[in-house]
Image (tube, rainbow, N blue to C red):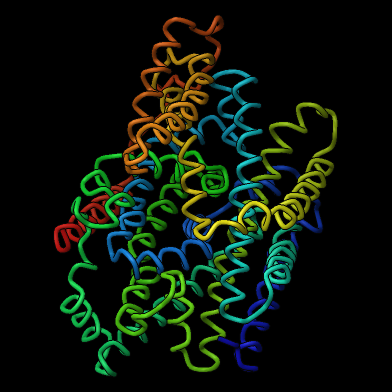
Amino acid sequence: MKLAALDIAVFAVYVAGLIALALWVSRHDKKEGQNTKDYFLAGKSLPWWAIGASLIAANISAEQIIGMSGSGYAIGMAIASYEWMAAITLIIVGKYMLPIFLKNEIYTMPQYLEQRFNTSVKITLALFWIAVYIFVNLTAVLWLGSLAIQTVSGVDLFTGMIFLALFSVAYSLYGGLKAVALTDIIQVVLLILGGLLLSYMGLDAVSNGEGAIAGFFVLTTELPDKFDMILSPDNKHYASLPGISVLVGGMWIMNISYWGFNQYIIQRALAAKNLNEAQKGIAFAAYIKLLMPIIVVLPGICAIALFPSLSAPDQAYPSMMSLMPVGIKGLVFAALVAAIVSSLASMTNSISTIFTMDLYSKFKPAKTQQHYVFVGRIVAVTSLIVAIVVAEPLLGKFDQAFQYIQEFTGFFTPGIVVIFLAGMFWPKASSPGALASAMGSAIFSLILKLYWPELPFIDRVGLVFLMCLVLCVAVSLVKPDIKENNKSVELNDVSFKTPSNFNIATVGVIIIVVALYATWW
């Protein structure tokens, strides 16, 4: 599929407009100079709408759009569990974790671990996160993003990666997190509008022009199995979404790790004006997550009816884009690229934050604020260059790179969740217990992968979490910290009471999720 001249013009206007907006947003900092709080935490000034939009923009990228549409084509609406369970997870993070993080006035997740445990835990996790963000997350977004661009526009892979990297640098490098977060509202609006338009046109095509509602009834009538939210053991995709475990098992661990302790996600909430704004932003993001399956999963189900003979499920979204008229196709393509570059910008900003604030500033403590900002920019550009160089050698040989990446990160997710939850809510958790949990997560996951290969991935994550929790408790009791000098677990002055608007939003999210599962159980 090729883009027409009008599509290219629409896309070019979007690129130029976004860069201009980012430079305008950063104009105040240009006059007065940026310190680290300005660059890495947007001056602690983000409003709720920017936080919520930026959380979603950082989360949704090409691998989610292309991959989840492909999963909708292959599995059906059950893949939406990742989105709907994430909505409830966001509420939990906003109520119980954000108050602790904001009380401790941290820049990064490793910084919190240093406050709670010691420098060894911080450095170990900081190096781990930098490596994962560069060699897994950043590389995946560049590679899979360029694959998506190649499918739609015909641009070769290397050129696509260069374009994505330059685009993200052009609008985010100078202004830092403020430029990223305040322009993400444009990105998310475009993503939602483009996705809804694609779903509408797909449903209309399914019903032969009788409208979207008629098209939806056609799908639920002719493809009822594609709307089963809880897969039975005899379903060929049961290993990917193992029945009731989706609701009570390892998916909770994966979601809590991603939304609660992932630097390039939680950094938006750390940059809030105050806790109330952060929690409103979290609630806003939760409602957008409830909407996302309509944007990224439903087009894949429509493709079953419209393009039943695709050679690969991941061709579903690009095939659906062929339904778009000239000009509108350029807008939907812009929405796809918006998702990619916002994720790139978020990741590079977080890589530079962790490197600069957790590592470099400790070895070079006497430098100016402007020097640290300069180092952060150098690290951001360097991380992109490294990711471009290693993308094809690391991911080019895998047919399903996204699933491989999920598998890899799942080796470490259970241990990370144990470290944070124990550190936040159990005063006796010790530094040796935290390190044992981190190492045990990888070891337990590898053993189960090798000797119990039929165990579904989500169930393995849940089981390893329990094993790491037992290990952390045992080691902490046997080897307690010598000095109990941390204050991060003193929760007496941390209020978990939330305002009425947050509570109402919470009830709404729960009711909607329960209704969705009750309808398509």
